[in-house]
Length: 229
Ligand SMILES: CC(C)c1onc(-c2c(Cl)cccc2Cl)c1COc1ccc(-c2ccc3c(C(=O)O)c[nH]c3c2)cc1
Image 1 (cartoon, rainbow, N blue to C red):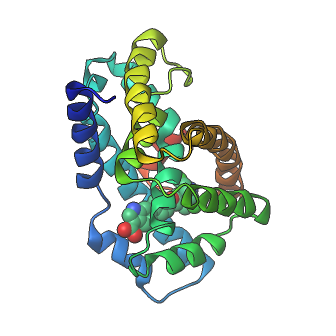
Image 2 (image 1 turned 180 degrees about the vertical axis):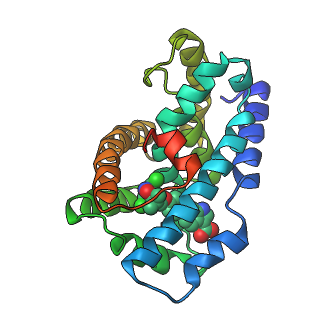
């Protein structure tokens, strides 16, 4: 079962995950009433930029992350940003509370210049995440596992990242058994979502290329993290 130090680790990560969220005044912008493709793209760009800032702050709270090589920290952030944002936006879609963000977020994503071939897998993913009914600890740990993926491009000390990731995977596996005793393959299903995230990340690269073809501008932070412009 989960040891004392694993409990402590899970608490640190879950508290950090809940603490670092998009500011409500930024999220509320989703509710404003312009719905042109241009307006939707600008709003989503603002949300993504704010989400990346939140992600950077969250990552600093992952025990051991700041002890990694500085360049590897950057490589892990760049390599996982899109996947972490898919997980975070999936949470918004599967939130039960009538924040109203769910409908407008879906509407804006569907009408922001993303081609149908990417929209379908994207919303299939959101649905498959919803069906997992993850508790918040599982969401926080799964995002952390995604960030600590050793084989991202340009990571030098993959072993160091692997050691950190294995520590988190061990806690997540035990938590899944505790939270879903009637579903022994639940942990495997969670890890299956990480494979789906990689595919979405490849689609995302093409989404960026097609937005740029139509002369869409990104913010400096997004250009840096996504190596565009
Ligand atoms: C540059 C733009 C156009 C872009 O490119 N690819 C993607 C993109 C898309 Cl379109 C889908 C998935 C991942 C990415 Cl990066 C995006 C938009 O990324 C987003 C959009 C929306 C949120 C988002 C919204 C609301 C909330 C929320 C709340 O309401 O309380 C709490 N946290 C939230 C986060 C995050 C990131």
